[in-house]
Image (cartoon, rainbow over the protein chains, first blue to last red):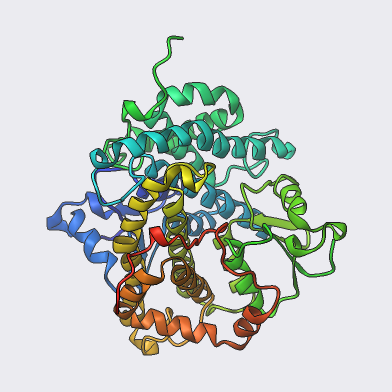
Length: 249
Length: 249
């Protein structure tokens, strides 16, 4: 299918959960290919994703799926931790690795809740069929959950005096910060009004997001055609009726 | 606080997400203590959990938290994988470990959705305040999601010809099967009618659940006072109005 060492299988057209993997691959400078973005004639497109999910002795429940040589495995936090550890994007001691996985999984929990704001009743039904419930769920998410999740990472940064509150694990950058960055980007896209209110409460998180955005490989990736913008088909969706009401500031 | 090698910090009174960790500790025959079940005078109870979450240089977002010597970390799938690998409850090769983590995370996704059936709109509000939405979410969960999640594990068992469809990874038991067992137990408790309909579609999963229940250490644990029964305060709740309507069979 390709000569790349790492093959990512994820739906083309959305950042989605695949983006968390893409960011680690890019930061690692890995030799990788986004199979979903290849033309079907080259074995790419959505068809390749569908085929890969059900293939092999260990099928995946859902993409993203990573293929490394003969090994095919899934679950975004699992893939990110594997790559982060393999490429040295986390200190080598056991405690750092366990804490990095903890952070990655906590971001994943927040991402799942962000998805549920527009699909609170049924994943497979249209947003329009669950709009009223979505408004209630989104209000709870904006007022309770975003401050709780981002507030948690703010506390981690503050508790961590070793690194002057710059990184989650202390002095060194680690891969779950790519996930936290993507979470904040998604929240800024989906809930811009709510984030104007929350951001001043979590200055450490917002500064970390900025530092990640400025990392040369991340900045180059985001400007490249490989990076797919947020849109109303992904996890993070901007429906104005689900955001805070517009405030004159 | 205790002389045990592994200290689990989780809310007393419910199986909850802590149960996934407890099952691995029990199957491993680990020297462990359930701090939440100790009397407050011995440093236990809910107070100890609250204190542990916010403690140290790396706070936890939520329990379960595991303390091993000086290392304190959280996120149930992370803890289960750590223990499963440390105690040899998964083959040592990298592919097996990655697939075990994949299974553990997929069970965790199903567990989060089971929770959302009774809290589709707001985690911190009462069930009674979101009962109508809960009915819709539960119907989707029962008719679409349970068959999809359990059907996935059924496919894994079938794809895995090496072990005759007995275990997820082939010939050998592995720790995510404890999680799958607990998921099925929870679904049987919460949605008995729906499970009467789904179970015949996933005979491999139901047989695996039975094999896990019969493992000596799991059977002994479940009979012990350490095991806390399901109840209407946990993740899996039996509200008859959220289950399939009663059928005469």
